[in-house]
Amino acid sequence: MLKYIYKAKAGHTGGSLSSVDILNVLYNVVLDVDPNHFNNVDRDRYIQSKGHCVEALFVTLADREFFPESDLETLCQYQSHYIGHPTKKVNGVEQNTGALGHGLPICVGEAIAAKMDNKKHRVFTLLGDGELPEGSNWEAFLSASHYKLDNMYAILDNNKQQITGYNKDVMNTDSIREKLEAFGWSVKEVDGHNLEQLAEALNSGPFEVGRPNFIIAHTIKGKGISYMEGVLKWHHGVPSKDQLDLANLELDQLAASIS
Ligand SMILES: Cc1ncc(C[n+]2csc(CCOP(=O)(O)OP(=O)(O)O)c2C)c(N)n1
Ligand SMILES: [Mg+2]
Image 1 (cartoon, helix red, strand yellow):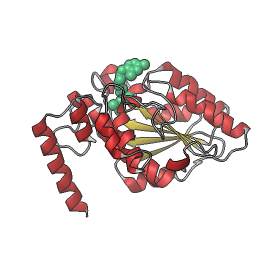
Image 2: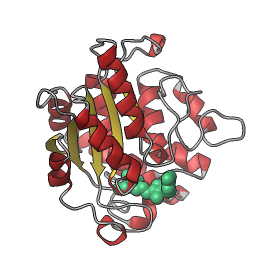
Image 3: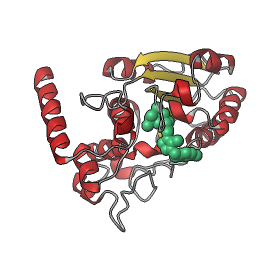
């Protein structure tokens, strides 16, 4: 992922690194989606509400062979479909997103439609914690519980930061569990970098019959790269060549330690 951000000279690096483990689990052990028949009406739906972190989505889709990974060499180039936010022109992308606060409301519509059609597929979205202040989310939280959408899963990438600073300073999102429970959702909390915990939570729904499912994934922005972890400027920082080399070295060392 970092090599494509380096080449494109653009990208949302920190939030892509905080969410790529979640995407890895979703696309490898949770979602029922077929790269060769993506339009199957019975597919699970995944809509990335925090669309700015499209780099994590693109590398995950490439890994599942929705398209050749070499396509990502064109990231953010003129006339490439691989632009800085999700677009349906890319195989595997369910909805255009990027204006924060839209993914969850779309999921409510998808989940209602599935219920009305007696379909068994599930609907997933990934929210950023800095996205929560968008008012449209709170209409959607109310609607999802009103319509008893237990076929719907919202995952919160709870990395404590957004574009201009810490959430506690920009717009406090504390007590999110209590807020969501008061809105009628069933809530679980996991370590967002623990693949087993993520898989267990995402595959164990509905948590309560008749209630929409909310997973708070506690994450670290810039996860995995020592000089990026928790450092605000990496929200959309692009590594220099030396920084890219150091990041690759750290990732190689990490891979060696777990293989
Ligand atoms: C409606 C809207 N307002 C502002 C932005 C600009 N913007 C892009 S990312 C971002 C911060 C999002 O923070 P968070 O959801 O926590 O993302 P993460 O930390 O996971 O990168 C903002 C304000 C936007 N994309 N959409
Ligand atoms: Mg955040």
